[in-house]
Each structure stands twice: as C-alpha cells, then as structure tokens.
Length: 269
Length: 357
Image 1: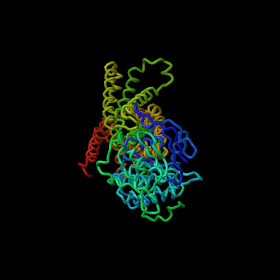
Image 2: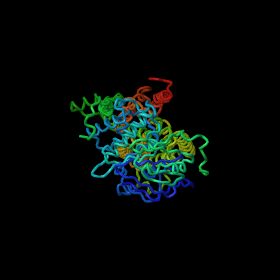
Image 3: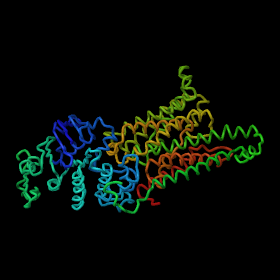
Image 4: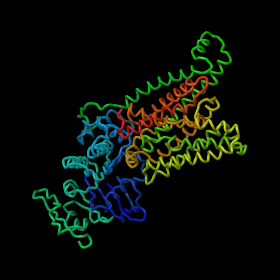
C-alpha cells in the first residue's frame, strides 16, 4: 500500500503541488495523468524522494525518508523519463548496475531474464550509447526490473515507479512495456506510472489519478473517473470518451473525434 | 534458482569484469618489472643485480652501494609507486564523480590548490606557533597540500554543481579560474621567498622524485594508502553515478556520502602526492582512459587497475627522465607532459570522431 496525504511541493517561489492526496494499491497499476505542467512528474519525484515534499507518505507502512538508501532500493525501482550514461558501458553492464551488491549466479540469470523481458537479450554486448532512444529506454526498464525482480519479497510487495515509460517507444513496444507493468502488478507488485497516452492508461490502469494545476481532480478506476467532464476540465479542451463495444467496458478516446471548433480554452471550458 | 529466469539460455554476455580482473595480474607483473628497472638504473653505476650478487655471496656492500640502494633508490621507488597510484586513482575518481573522462585533478585546478598549500607551508611555515610545528612535525607540507587540494575541490564542486547536476563546462572554467587564483597567490609567496625557499619552490613547478627520502615517504604514504584503500570502495557508487545522481540514489547508493568520500579521497591523495613530488600532470587522465579502452569502464576494477598502471607509468617516466640526459635528470613532470599531452589531444580528437583508432 502506498499512501501520500497533503503532498505539497514548492520549487523556488512557485508551488507545484497544492496539498494533494494520492494512493496506490499493490497488485494494481496506478496511472497519473494530466496535461503538461499539471505536476505528474513532480508528484512521482516526490514519491521517489527525488525532490523535497511536505506531507505524510507511507510505502508498505514505512516512511521512506527513514529508510536507508539500500533498504529503499530493495523495495522499489524507479524508471526516469530520460537517462544519460557517462561512460561506454555495454547493455548488460548497465542492467547489472541496478543490482544490489552480492552478485551471484542467480543475479546473472536475472540480468539476462530482464533483458529478455524487454526484448533486448540479443543486445547484451552492444554499447548502450549506440542504441536508439527507445532501445535505451527499454534497457533502463530492464535495469529497474532486475533491481526489483520478484514483485513480492518476504510477503511485502515491491514497487515500480515509471515516469512516462512509453514516451519514446513505437506502438508494439508501448504495448510490450505496459504488459510488463501489468504482469508485475498481477504477480503482486505495485506499479505507479506517469502516463500521457489516455488510451493506454484506460487499457492498462486499475486506478487513474487525474491531475490539473497541481491538484488532484479525481482518482479511481478508469471507468469511473475517465469521463468527458473530468478529462475536458483537466486538459482544457472538449474530449469525447467512448466505451468499447465489448464486455470489457474499457474506455477509449479518439483524439481527433472532436472537431477543431470544439477545442476551447481551459477557463471557458 | 531465480523464478522466471531459469529457462533463459542465451549466449553468455562478454564479461569485461573477468578481463579486467586478469589485467590486475598483468599490471602487477608490469609494476614489478618497472620497479626492478627503477632500482637497477641510476647515474652511479650501482646495479641491483650486482648488489644482490654481492649479498648472495655473503660480501659486505660498500657504503656507496648501501646508500644508493637503500637510502636513495628504494624510497624513490616506493614514493613513485604511491604518487603514480594516487594521481591515476584520483583521476579515475574525479572522472567518475564529474561523469566526464576529461576531468583530472591537474586540469581542474586541484593540483594547483594542493601546490599552493605546500608553498604556503614552505614560505610561511616558520611563522607558525611552535606547538603547532611540534604537533604536525614533518607532516606540515603534506597536510597543507592536503587542505589546499581539499579546499579547491570543495569550491570547484560547489561552483559547478547546481540542483544535483554538474556542468562540465563550468567545472573546467572554474578549474582554470581557481588554478589562476592559486598561481597568483603562489606568485605573491614566491616574491616573498628567500633563496632556499625559491629552490624548494622551483621543485613544484616541474614535478620530480629526485628529493625522495624515507622521511617524505613516511609523511605521504599513510595518507595516500588510506585514500587509495578508501577509494577502492567507491566502485559501485561511481558506476551508479554514471547513470546520474537520481538513478544512483534509486539503486540504493548513499549519493551524498559517496560524493563526500570521493572528494576526501581525491583531495587527500592528490594533496599528499603533490606535496612530495610537485606538479606531475596527465597520469590522471591517460591511465583511466587507456584502461577503459582495454577492459571497460566498471569502476570496481578500473580503480585498482588505475593504481597499478599509474604506479608503473610514473616509475617508467622516472626511469626515462633519469636515462635521457644522464647523469643529470629530467623532472618527471616534463616527461609525463611530453607523453601525456599528445595522448590527451588524441582523446579529445577521438571524442570528436576526427581520429578513429
């Protein structure tokens, strides 16, 4: 269980998050969505400890600020939006960096299994810096997966924090990565992902937190919170949410369904 | 067995760590070979083999032989090993810390800061209260160099790091500025120095092991060896830092503590090395770069290999410096610059893709 209450973040003189509440369950994928500048990544960074935030935050019942870095690393992995690498490491070496100390034969298997999961096992000996942006992002995901390989350890769920995990990927790899997140949750782990693509969010998330201007508009199952009104209010334009004509009742948006004339500024929406 | 991983049967990835570990052995053998050359070569004609043969036959050594071997060459050898290892490992640690293969204590002004500290100790040391002189004894110059290097490192890091991100351009420019400032203040002290102090100070500018003695070794070795051993524990942290500070923290590294330890190690090792040998450049850049080409950038092995190769290269430069204009000596700083500067240019060109070797 992850719970954050009254999260406030101020950078310089600008308040980015205005005391919002957010929660996520294990065995579930929780998505954070919202327009640019709504505070999605800031919220994720507050949850991963990358920036200072006030409020009450508990991960598996612990205050992460009180844990040692390695204890926290054993509990959760974080995939940043973009990663740069300083030296010419190979793909397998990058994934290995994520492992905790005490590397054993099993760990070597985990590294290759993680690379296989993201479809890059045959790239193990390639230089990371020679890969495309999308491939690098998948290597980073493999690194994070290797770090928290077992979704549940000693009865405690582990967590994946993903910041726009599909941003630089083609559609097949978007589905692949979201399925990896889904599998992690199905196996008992918790996933918190910042998402831009509302359709993928509706397909894969169990819970969606919709942010706007540093505040939480709504959080709940996609079928409940992904409504015309909430999304139009959050994004400042008219959006048409549709329901799949199947038993899944999944929501989807056609981004061009609304005519250009329907796009209205946020304040008059 | 790892759940979900047991069915994986891919071609094993190339293990550069194994290769790097094998390199430990070869570099150790190289160090032994260069050490023997360093012991046996010199202006006096006393050779290691001749001396050993005499000892084997149970003959007494002449006073000259004993002094040359045990009081001149042996401390010079051990000091050279310490200084070479200190400079190379400091370079590797700085490069890991700044995430840039061109960072080096010499280029970013830490050596200049350490040299300034040593110059202050030489010129103004006599003005210190007696109880302080008694307390620090023969450690005064290394200590002053240590604090000079440490202070410069801290300023450099502060200036070039903002919101956890270190700007390489700012770092290099700040390094140039700090080196210029250290040179200016050193100039003031040189202006104030007497003839004896001037002779001592000239030593800093060129860098040399010529004045090696057991006293210097005893003063510098504990600091350098402690810093080296501590820095060997930085390997995993520096690997993590290659992915950025945030990711390093995410994988369980105590980033700030690691940075503090790294800065302390670099300042201590560079400070003590500069104190006993003066300004010797390029070892810190060339050695880690060659090793990254040979066995990859993993700092867990790179730091140990840097120590071994750095020590070997410095001793080799010392032997060359002694041989090239025998019986006079060319200071090591000149030899390393003549060899190191072109290699440094080659690294720059290679990074820009102009030279492909």
